[in-house]
Amino acid sequence: MRLNNAWGLGMAQSIVRNIDEAIKVSLRLLVTRHGNSMGEEVRQILSAAAIENPDQPKKLGTWFATVFASEGLKKSIEEHRGLIANPANCG
Image 1 (tube, helix red, strand yellow):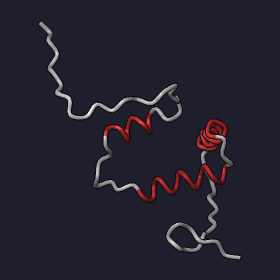
Image 2 (cartoon, one colour; image 1 turned 90 degrees about the horizontal axis):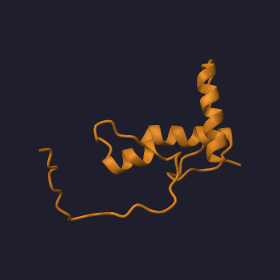
Image 3 (cartoon, rainbow, N blue to C red; image 1 turned 90 degrees about the vertical axis):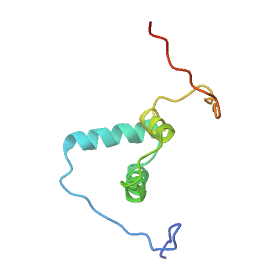
Image 4 (tube, rainbow, N blue to C red; image 1 turned 120 degrees about the vertical axis):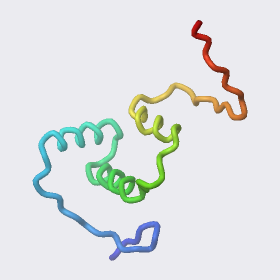
């Protein structure tokens, strides 16, 4: 039985050899933190890398979400759209 992904394409299997030990340790930590299997974690990493467009910079909120994803939040952060930012008074 052949499974299809979201684009209707067949799913492939890959083997990666000679992975640095530090990378393997980091992957195991991510697996534990995210509660995924190793295969699922690697699929998510590869999917994110494959759809990333280097010509289009990430938006600031996306960057923050990526950097602080492992920290977790106790509540949602409010959005403040349309507000005027006042410069800081340093004198």
